[in-house]
Image (cartoon, rainbow, N blue to C red):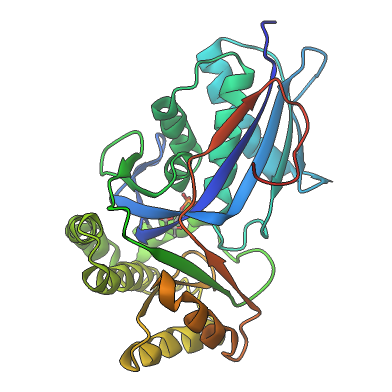
Length: 333
Ligand code: PMV
């Protein structure tokens, strides 16, 4: 087998400002709507992949424990894509660690699959091509396509790979994550999307409106126009969640704490502290805020009844790669 057979990658999580919910092509995992996200500085996955000719099957350790069968099967499917591209039949040892709770609605699959594909392709001796890495990560989890890049990232409709969105450097924002519960989410995103498509009369409306919202949101972010961007961010999240609430039975990721945080954000805005919320397939609330107001808003959100903690995240970097490394580093470079 050719060297290097080991590589380590770091990929940062991302939160969509223009949401993705629904698949145009389930087999190829192509989204039904375009999306745009912010990569987060403080939440990341670190993954080491080692192809080892002595292994009889892939071995996955996640956050220091042996992975479940379901987790291992998903990782093996991702490795199969890399093995196919590299014409390789060797199994791999995978060690992966999140610096935040896995499967909690904090987008661990985004950073997880971006780091996995980036490390696995390099360990398999393939060239470091981020367009291919993004397309392959997308096949595992569409939001993972966006975690290959830092800054603000778009996954346009019908495209295989994500791409950077050129945002002026003076666009100085943070994303606050109000953690409202511990533990894994109740229903996974793929299952949730299928169920929404199959049972919600609002799904078609969401898919119809999302592209225009994405275009307006892209224009606002490229112009660094925070006050134009904010309402579009909230509208995208609320339209997406409305499509889920219209499913039968309804998918409701929100808890009473989620709602309290949303109301508090709106109230603070009326009082001059300008933040805009978004939510994903989990109960946490993420709030986009201008950096100078981040400390004030974070303190206000931490005081909301039921909020466990508030994470402050700046705009995160590109995913990084080191060849020939077979150990986790324990922290981002
Ligand atoms: O890529 P997935 O399957 O983890 O789905 C992500 C879906 C949302 O987080 C709700 C929205 C998004 O665009 O990230």
